[in-house]
Length: 197
Image (tube, rainbow, N blue to C red; front, side):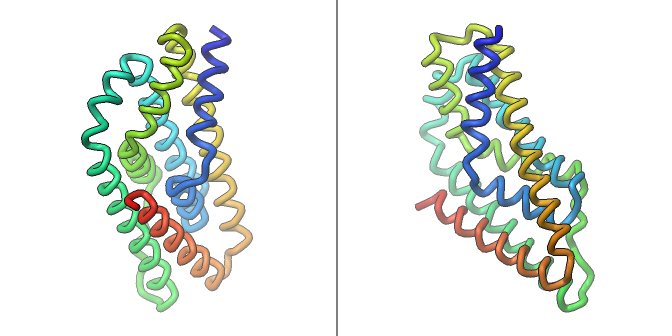
């Protein structure tokens, strides 16, 4: 039990810690809205990681092989969604600057579902977990592995959301929020381009 749980914790951190588009999205969303919304978004990413860990334990090698032919369209879809998010973030920040009504009314539920869906578009995660499960000699202690992976990912994503909240508090002025929103949009757009190049 403890070996499988620790393997899951290591795997969860391994997939969650590298800062990519999702981490930037969570931090930027938290800075613009609230810790509650950012935490919900982070838990959406962690849920996706937990789902993929479960899929890997239940038959990841077979699924990884079947996902491979559609990996490129999934990457393009993820890139398109990220570009749309980047544009939305920049437009929302610029509208606030010009005095227009803000369209950023993200709720915790919407943040959770949006980030869950976006994170599930990354089939590389299930391949990663499947390789780890197979490398450990199968799915022994599978429930503990999945729980460890989910908790590790959740703790990291909540740390990212907390960092976004701190940045949001430090940059509470109009100009600071505009700059962070535009930087966040640019980074998300660059990461989207990186998915397809």
